[in-house]
Image 1: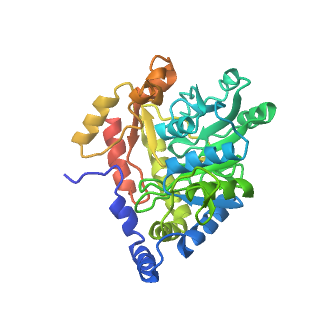
Image 2 (image 1 turned 60 degrees about the vertical axis):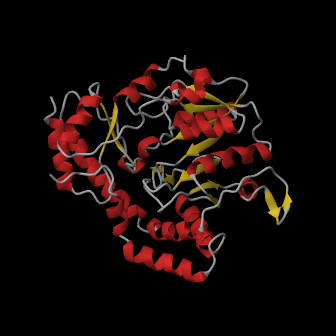
Image 3 (image 1 turned 180 degrees about the horizontal axis):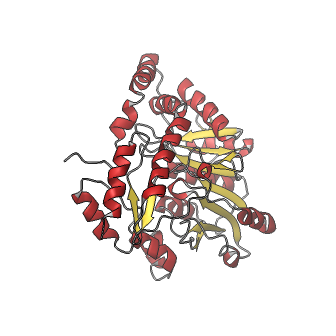
Length: 368
C-alpha cells in the first residue's frame, strides 16, 4: 500500500530541482557564504513581495520573533515587564520570544470557529501595562480583523505579526507581514515558503527598527568590533537565501495548488464527527496546514494511518500546560485546551494530487 505522506518535502523541492541546483552551485563557486549577494537579493525581493520597506533576515523564525521584540525594547517602544496580548493556542515559539525579552504574555482564547484569536475577548485582557498584540496567523489563515485594528488604535498598542505559517496570505489587498508595525517570518523547510535548512526574517516599514535588528543579529555590532547592543549571532546563510530566492518566485503558484486541495476537502468532507474551521475568503488563507477538529482525534489518526494516510497534530500540548512554563499550568483556558485535544491536520502540499485528496476524503467520510 502506497502511503500518502503528510508532507513530501523531497517531492516539493524536486519541482524546482534544476533551479535549486544552479543557485547552489553559484553560491559554492562564489566563495562567499555569509552576508553576500544572495542574502541581499532575497531581503529585497521578499520585502517587495510582502509590501514593506525593510526585511532583515536571520537564522530562524524564533530568532526573528526575539529580534523583533528586542529591537523594540532597544528603541524604547517596549520596556521590560510590558504585557503582550497573544493567542493562547499559538506554537510555543511565540511565547518563548516574549518571555526571553522580559515581557509578559497575556493569553487570550481563540474562537473555536476559526481557531484564531477571539477579537471579542481581547479588550477585557488589556491593562495599563499592555503595550502590544502579537497576531499569529495560525495554520496559514489571516487572524487580522477590523476590531483588532480598532483596539490597537484605541489603546495605542503596537501590532506585531507572527507570520511563520502564512507567507502570501492577503488581508484587504495587503500581505500578512505588512499589516502591523513589524512581523516575524520563518523559513523552516515545512513552511509555505521553506528553505532546505532553517531561516527567518523580520519585515517592517521602520528603517530605524530594521537597523537596530540588523545590529542585534550581528552580535550587537554596527561597526566591526564595536558593540552597541548585547546582541546575538543570527544569520541567514547564502545557500539558504539562494534557495529561498528560487522558491519565492514560485510561491503564488504553490499557494494556488494548496488552495485547490483545500477546496476539495471543504467541498467533499461530510462526516458529522468532523468540524472544519471557518475558512472565509480563500485569499486570506494559504493553507500551510488543513486542521480539522474531532472529539475522536486519536482514533481517527490511527484509522487514517491504517489506511496509509499520514496526519499530524498541531499541537498536542498548549503553551500554558508545558513544563517549562509551570507557573501557568493551573490556568484554565478551555477553548485552547479543547483545540489541542481535538486538532488533527490532514495532508496538504503543492505536490499533492486531487486523486490523493479523494482518498483522504473517502477515508475521513467512512470513519465511524
